[in-house]
Image 1 (cartoon, one colour):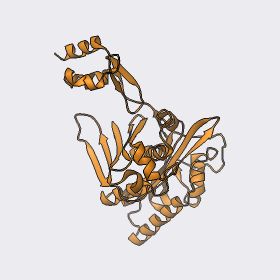
Image 2 (spheres, rainbow, N blue to C red; image 1 turned 30 degrees about the horizontal axis):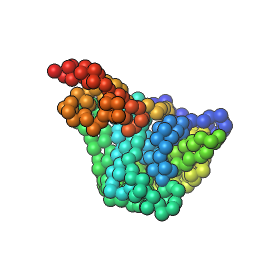
Image 3 (cartoon, rainbow, N blue to C red; image 1 turned 180 degrees about the vertical axis):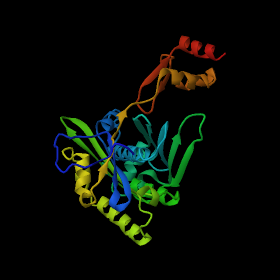
Length: 325
């Protein structure tokens, strides 16, 4: 990392820093981490779909987890988090490009969701088994057609997405990693607004941490301390718009003098385009498009991420298939 600095000891109430990831390092403990906080990006992505709260909250948490994991890697492409199961929420997908474009969507069965919730308006604590059922959590890094695609897959085990992520790290032989996630929706002026945050800590390799001479027992004690300090963060602190990210880190790890690094900025940006949809349609036989036609006879394709609709009349289709000849 570059551009590090110690967290200042004074608080700036104007230092709001949402839709950003703040990497940090605890040199005294041999630990690195990041604090991801999302706000306006979640509003732009989630509110346009009108999801029930029991679907919207898991999606908000998943997008925050995606951002936290993606920014811990060095990649040039797309990091995707996908949750699929046989429960009321069939599929949840979110991805983040290396240049900060974030998006996400969910597929669910309204009737099964109502039955599973049993009158509740939002997802209960430990909602994963009830809302997703049996399924899997997959992480994918795609850096283009000329590179090898990496994918990690684990079963959905645990009550929360945090539990499922911990299962991934345990089974994938990664460095010990701790994660804490919080998400909340508020009504202001008749409009819904989301805030979500993820705090991660990860034990660094001895050489990278400059702690080759530290004995294993001390190393384990230092790791345990970092996890305890991370877990002490409350949801209210993580989601407080008046508490800057750097100040939250100082509050949690004051004695360890956290060093912070350059922030990563996110934005709600979909990658769909008419050119992309043209390529999708071109790969299909023209007679296979009948199910996509609306009452006026046009072929209509809707992007599940951003809800943008792309309409094609017969002249448009002539153009597409002529270019494929």
